[in-house]
Structure formats: C-alpha cells, structure tokens
Amino acid sequence: MVFLIFVGLIIFQRITELVIARKNEAWMKAQGAKEFGQGHYLAMVSIHTAFFISFILEVILFDKNLSDYWPVLLALFIFTQAMRIWALTSLGRFWNTKIIILPGANVVKRGPYKIIKHPNYLIVAIELIVIPLMFNAFITMAVFTLLNILILSIRIPAEEKALRELTKYESEFSNQGRFVPNLLNKCDN
Image (cartoon, rainbow, N blue to C red; front, side, top):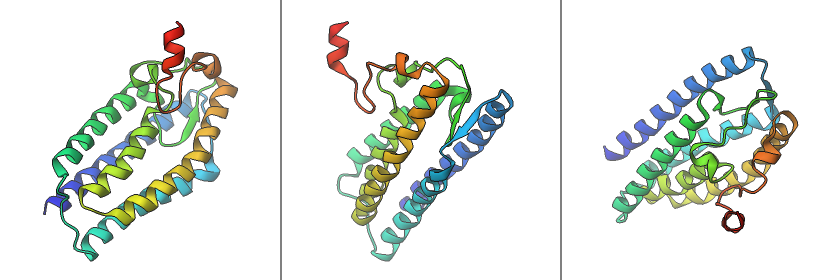
C-alpha cells in the first residue's frame, strides 16, 4: 500500500508537470520561441516512462519491500522535491520538458541557477537513484541511472548549444559548473 501511494504521488506530480510544460510551450512559442532537440526528446520521454514501468514491475514481481534505510531515503527524496520545485519556479514560464528557447530572452540566473547550470538534471539523476532504493529496486536503479547518463550526454550539449545561439548564455554562465558549484571561480571573485 505504501508503495502504491508513493508511486501514485510521483506519477501525479509528473503528469501535472507535463500539463504545465504544455502551457509554457504554448506561451513561449506564441512569443517566438524555437524548439531544439526534437530528435532525442522521444528517447528521453521513453526512458522516463520505462523507468516507472520497470520500477513498478521490479517491486511487484520480485516482492521488494521498503528499504531499511527508508527514513534517510525519504528525507533525501523530500529534499529533491523541494529543490525540484525551486528549480522549476525559478524558471517560471521558461521551464519545459523540451528544449524551447526564446531568442534574446534574459538567461534565468536566480534560485539554484545562481549556483549551477543544470539543477533540474541533477535532481532527476538523484531521483533515479533514490526512488528505486526506497524499495530495494537495484536493477531499475542501475539500468536507468546509466540510461539517464546516456540521454543527458546528448541533451545537455544540445540545450547549451541552443542557449548559446539565441541568448547570452555563454557570458552569463561561463564561470559555473554544470552540476556542482564552481567553487574555485567563486573564490577568485
């Protein structure tokens, strides 16, 4: 029962995010935004969908139970959800599941984007580890962590290229790390 509630809440959250993303996409395209990375988008959606299918099947078919470390993992999960909301609300209408760039728009550099370039991708990477570990779904964790690394190795360069072409991304984020703060550059300032 705990498992079904947990998975149900996450799936509800993801569906809500897709609704918001569609509204943001319509608004951005009405403002003249351009879409990039369509070639890998279906693969990314497929990976995320397959993650939930794999997770559910692994837990049910192999009769997995809640981890002994669930309190720590739940705390980490809640932390990632707070960070996720912070990242998405910091981008506001510019947040999307697709790469949609409004030419000449000011680069968002508030919230977690003050610290690192891609907080939401970091959050998702952590979730793909923490969510399966909550129920000892080690196969799902390993497979989808690797698939996420693969898809992000395509997506992030495509996103950064689009941002460089249409915004001042390069100058705004030249001293920031992708997933961890660039502390060396912070010390120089």
